[in-house]
Picture: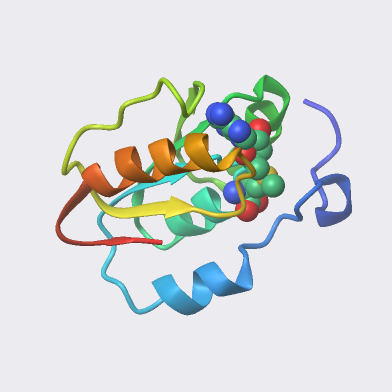
Length: 127
Ligand SMILES: C[S@@+](CC[C@H](N)C(=O)[O-])C[C@H]1O[C@@H](n2cnc3c(N)ncnc32)[C@H](O)[C@@H]1O
């Protein structure tokens, strides 16, 4: 293992996005999925708060950094390497479905949003 991953080594930083913390802090922990997790900052923060987290991205490099950061922080996340245009999360399988800053053409984004919405459990949150 190399040196510890400091925030400055990560493209999007090691801490969670402030809009995510504002929306999610009050929610009771449950099952979460982070679509387009990048280097995992939001997924790791959720896991630290007791969520059972699946995190998806097609970047092997991003997921490797995410996995390393999670290990450093002592939390477990189910990292999945997949293209969001093909990946199908379990319908109704998640109390929180999170998408933060993924950049896709509008038709592709609409497709991902439809899949994301279908993954929200009754009473869950899609952000
Ligand atoms: C701007 S980053 C945001 C990362 C993270 N959500 C965050 O807020 O730190 C966008 C991420 O979406 C991923 N991504 C973009 N298109 C994707 C696709 N079709 N399938 C899977 N991941 C994708 C990229 O690899 C990148 O890690």
